[in-house]
Every structure is written in C-alpha cells, then in structure tokens.
Length: 143
Image (cartoon, rainbow, N blue to C red; front, top):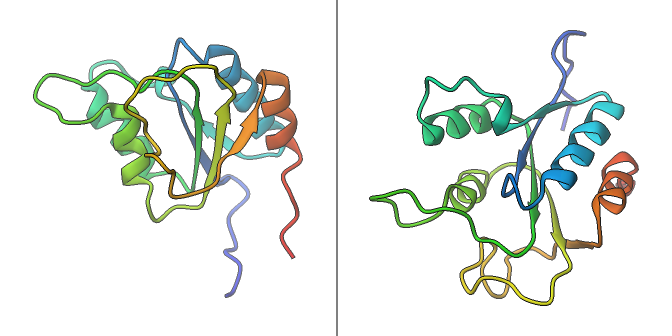
C-alpha cells in the first residue's frame, strides 16, 4: 500500500471519543499528546453549538482519519428517541477507521458498555491521564 502524501497544512485528524466530564483530565492529556506528535485532535467540546450534538460528532468523525476511544465507568447519555448513547454511536460509526482504545481501570462500570462484553478489540488499560498521555505520545512501533 502506497503511503498517502499530504500537503503540509493537512495533518491527520484524531477523533477523541469519551464521556466529557468523567474523563476531562484524560481528554486534556489526549489532546496535548496528539498535538505533540503533530496530529490534529478533533474534540466534540470545541464544536459550533448551533448544530445538534449528533450531527456535530458525526460530521467531525467523518472528517477524521483515526479514532481514539477512552472509556471508564459511564456508558454515556442516550438522547430521547435513540437506542444507544452518542459514545457508542461514535464507536459504531468508526468501524472502518484505525483505532486506539484505552480503558481506565475501574472497580465498577455501568452495565451497558460501549465496547460490549467481551469487547471486539483488546483495549489498553490506563490508570490516569499521565499514563494515557505517555501511551499516545509514544505508541508502539509497527513492523
């Protein structure tokens, strides 16, 4: 497969998916680490508010090249008339994207899980925002 040659102004976009409040420190660490490796973090909270949340994250996801999922205890909010949380919808929509998945260690979790039980991919476990930053900043080398 031939590598994609990008213009200098077009960096790879990394869509960051997680609960916003529960994982605020991890989101901040992820954003910083993504920028440190010269990629562009795509964060829901920086979006234009005139758009409905679902339209916004779906548009951001469609323009991203990599999916970064960070999960902990919460499943996320299910909007009226929907059958899954936005968090799970993001994960489902990213099915064809390269993924980095991190799960923060927890004693308890909500019964419904984004990744399912068992998960379709083996996530990396993290303990805190610093560990996440280090994992993103120096990912494993692919041979």
